[in-house]
Image (cartoon, rainbow, N blue to C red; front, side, top):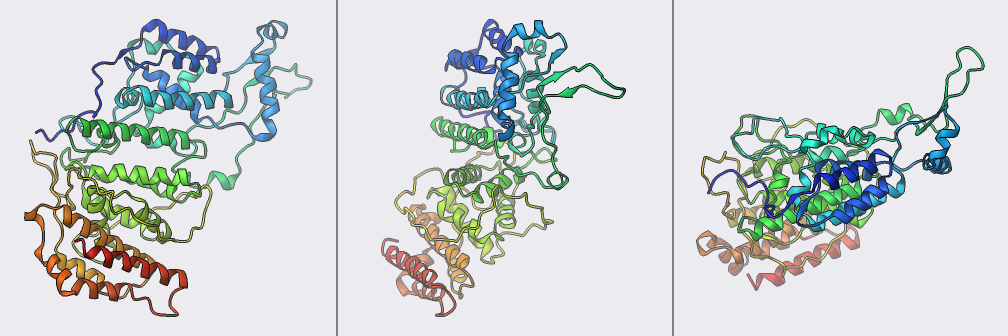
Length: 513
């Protein structure tokens, strides 16, 4: 099997391009500012047999990301748009000039809804043609130069306002840029009235003008996810998940080639990819949100990234270190992540590698990195770490993954990684020391739980018989006694109860291992 990943896991051969006449009908609506009508038409043209125009997907993305007007100016905007909707108004007042129409909140809502329906109807690869990506073919991976979104032959003729604005998406390197705060900004006005100068130096006055951003706000670091980009982020994640399922259905490992294409290839042109700072920033931002749905987006995205470690295309060693450097200082967020991930083979393997790194093992070489400033969370939230129950029966028999994959892949290598469990003696060493924090307790619990479940599922040749011996002679039980012995007065009643609960669950499962 070739070392080059496939372009996408879905079947796109049955999708044809939407006809030129149909595309021009939508263009006409958008050119005149009738965004809702154009979006309704796109919804009517939607079919699993036809690929949507990449330009129309970009334009709907731009509309879906457009910020709503300030609450105090909604009345002004409605009045201005009402005048635009009446052609006779222009004939009456020749001095009144029409500037490019801005999308209305109703158009934004319609774009978000129709994008979601396209995600259900069409293949992820046909939709991702609208977005920039890096080449997957190692022969064409010339470094950090992304491939812009696709453009059909007749799309150069479309010079409407919304088309020009949406073209900025093609200038991005990856899809992560379009959900960043400030990528789409409101225009300063949508109607300009030319007043007759009454005195020298007088200039025309806008009827609607956006409030200027304060100097303090302009110096703040933009959030990885803008306040109006959550729907778009969920749309992207759903496409990656659909692409991942299609890959598994086609007999490949369960990973998303489209997600891999959003990670820059090595500058050397060969070897696994590793620059995942962009999506990890988004994961951290999601996990800081108070809304469960937004936090779940972070869990879903990091699950997709972890599944990439089932192949040789992502450097698992560096991936683990990047997560450690970003999340370990946020104990509450780290705990939420550990307790929210699903119990699959790649996730369990990832948990073992991450917990080994965090608990002080030298098996994963640390990577020196300068601290990166964190964007302000929106909104900031303080969360108390709480234990969550684990579904130990949901372990799926998927393809196993490699814990440490830092060696560049030679040509014609099978992109299937073999799960190799670390020595059982190392697991015992890591847990056989007093825990210094609730995060230490959680990591030791996750480490033993993941190891025990993977050990049951491992092939006979991959099992360390010392694990079985530790279960029989009581060494593992003694290690758990030390790990989960919370001294009185050093922890709250809830923390003590949580530690006893974790230890009790592990001891109970030892009989099944």
